[in-house]
Image (cartoon, rainbow over all chains, first blue to last red; front, side, top):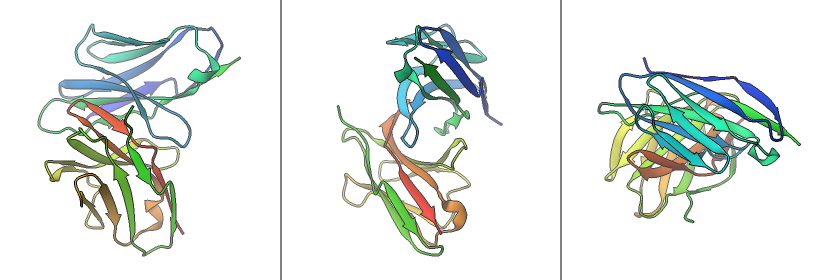
Length: 111
Length: 111
């Protein structure tokens, strides 16, 4: 069974305090690993897709990296507006296009 | 920038009633999805739609659910006889093969 586990469940940072969120995945061959940002009461906002180990993608203060077993979302010098829940989802290779989502990491950045 | 839109933003209905949730996907996207998220839980896949037919569905998507693309732009999710446990946020998403863009969601409350 495909599984995606995110840690920590919650993270509080001071503004400017860099950190990383973890997404561990167990899927039968990875087609893609997705990162989303979700604000309360809103839909997930697409951030990145990573396809192969060693790949990195960046957007503003966020950088996503991928290994064969996990992905990290690095947040550099976060600001209060980065506060949100960050979701990752893994898409297995094969005929299905159903992604498996993790429970998310709730990030709060204090000014 | 084009966005996925959903209506209504909030729907309250009585148990046993039918509801139709509406979505307007991004116009040049070919894949359409419905997901739900029960409060505090993971995002769960319901169904995907491609080339005017269901391509995949989860075990949640039972005979009570149906999807339609009635006019080439709208994409609807119908729940025939709502149950209390159907209360959740319902998200529509559209995209290409390895990217999905979510709408803002419809909060369905079944009383």
